[in-house]
Image (tube, rainbow, N blue to C red; front, side, top):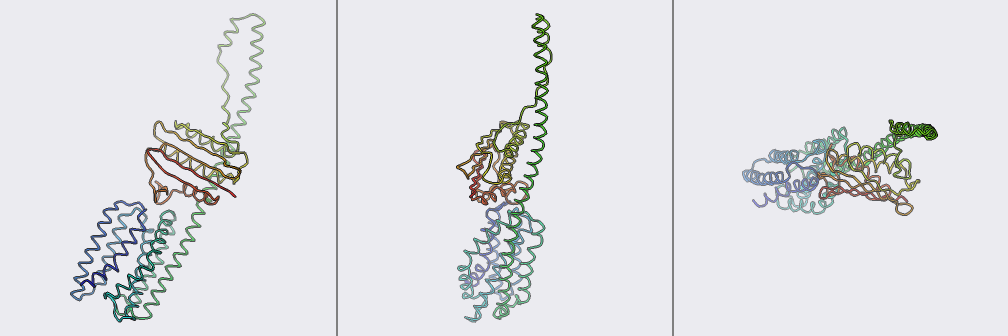
Length: 430
């Protein structure tokens, strides 16, 4: 009986271990309840399958049923699109199928014993010991990449590749006959499944990297278009302001002549009435010189007006030179995303404020910080990755900031504490 329990644990427990480990940093609806349900599913499987094995009944369909229940527990508990969950969970199942198949082949070939012998279980434990540390690390990283990447059309399709590969292997190696695992055909099928999983994993990583780069490029393009539009608007406002100043100067000369005429004639009452007449229109306030760089200054004026319109106190400190050590659009993408996040956090609240600082360090480095009030703590993954409130995974804005910081040998840090949100970006172009 202990031999059967050891076999069930060796073939079932790793699936829960990998699932919990790789999904741990995702958003859960009820994590503790999911762990309890998974433990209950495993214990019930031990009892039911143990009884079936003792009575000599076939347990293949029963094992499949418990696997479906386990998958359902995680699917209902984790806040992730079902297509993403399918892809990542199928990878786990493929790994378990490969280990079980190789262990069965070696058990029959070396000891003439297969499922559920203790030798098979020891072979499984040995294979887990050799591969599980690497698998846990890479599966968790792949889940984070999948979780942070928004590509619905990709996730709806790509999970079918490993799913069909595993289904084909199970059907054509006669999974319902345990002795078929001793054939070279079964081993070859498991190795083909391993190759399919590796290739799918490799292709996926390349696609995800390209998608992230594309998202950053699109964000950069949108920011450039916004900057150009702002510059055109600011230029038109500046032209109107200059015309207003010319008119005011002309009117001032006329006022001086009229006042002089009243003084020359000694008409003090007429002068007093004239001075109390409605004043001329006030000229449009000029653009504030927050920064010596024209493009960055345009963007700062734009966000200063947005914060002011919502009654949010907005402070800017900048000592950036006119010529930047990196392309202006990249810095504007970082600045724009930080300002947008701060504006969203402060909106609809009283007594809110935001402080943005841009400092040049030496001739090459730039430090950008944005501190603002944030009554509600943002959702974080792994303690540092800021999750979006609009979709699964990391926000596109913070993702763009991190990507650009990495491109310039820098870092990006975000954290919330006691109602305040702090963001800092270090850029070090070489």
